[in-house]
Image (cartoon, rainbow, N blue to C red; front, side, top):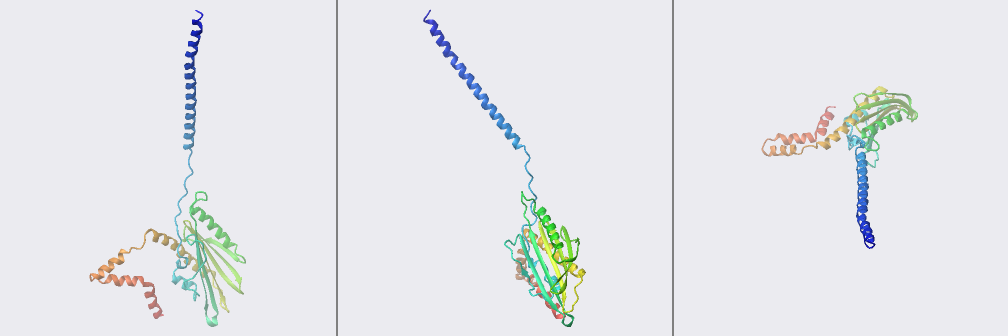
Length: 286
């Protein structure tokens, strides 16, 4: 009896050990499961958080050649006797983001004096940026800035500003007078926005050697005409990139010529040289 009692105690003690281990194991599993559930719950909450909406893509990704953005005929009308008929391009580190071109000339009228004209066009393009906003929004801010800058031109007199209809998505023409080099100048600055591009065009003129100062009306009319062409050039550049000129047409015309149809080749040559061919007759007739 005395020997069996200690033996029974040892058996009971050993039997109790697995029970405790099982209990500990269950407790550990339940803790890890609860942590997993908590983690999945928190991740689920994070995934349901609404993400910031993407900004609108910029409409234009390039700019036109500024010196070719205004028709040569328009340049001839607005800046007679221009020193450089093809214009003088402004400096830029990135022509796809910022570019400009200017023309100036003095038209000698003999005993009636001389007329001076100066025309400048500038383009500024903005890309869409998640942190800065869409290209159109950034361009709108630049548009407002340029209008304010034109109104604050140093030495300007009789400043006036009004909307300019039919030029881009929004446009303003700022007019003022300015005295310099001993003469009175009439100024007109047109600021226009089309998509994510801002066009700023300034046109001014003065009379020298007794010639009259050009009227503000004529300066505004010329500035608006040139500004419309500059804005249209932005869209034309984008369209040209999307739909490049078809080369197959000229190839077909050559094939037609080879077959004896003849007219295709002649038309192709006249189209490519049309500015020159049309200008020569006009010169002779005048």
